[in-house]
Image (tube, rainbow, N blue to C red; front, side):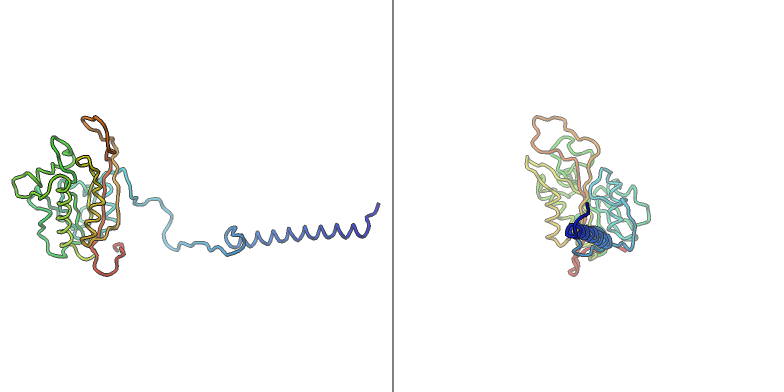
Length: 273
């Protein structure tokens, strides 16, 4: 049985509409492809072009389980130009410098044990490109507490007979040392000179003291700009000799803080060339 002319016309119209929809969908697909992926066809999506460099995950990260001697050279790499005059004013045994190639920087190493107090430096105003500061960052309440990584705080800065005592006690004495050492660093640094500071938080008299925050506030008031922070996590599990009840989290990390001396102009950091 043949279809009527009316039925033929309706079938033809349906076929035409279907073909039109298919054609429209193809056109939308081509538009989306040409604009680098689907974007509802509304706005062209520009493809990001990286003109220099190459993909990598070999980066300097803000937190690490590596030791001080592994992290410190990376901080120098980011912030201190080779050939710079660097004064490590709490040099100690030179742990930070174990993995720094000799001769890359003009190192001036001093320490209280060698008779050089970090609060009274022999350098001229604006003489240094970088100052490294790692004083004892915990007071010693007694016994052998905290003596494994630093000499007892009181031995060199409170109760010794060399006249190096601080005016305060306990945690406030720690802050005094950072304040006075930071003042000397500011004086001896060039404009835009870098100040690298090691510190750790502590609990003193059952009160939580976020030392790294206190130091940042203190140094920013003195004219430094806080630029970076590196967290060093201990790879082993610290313990205590006696525990009745734990009140605060046991600290198993420390910090490198990076500051620079503002020159009164641009307050944005410019990496060394």
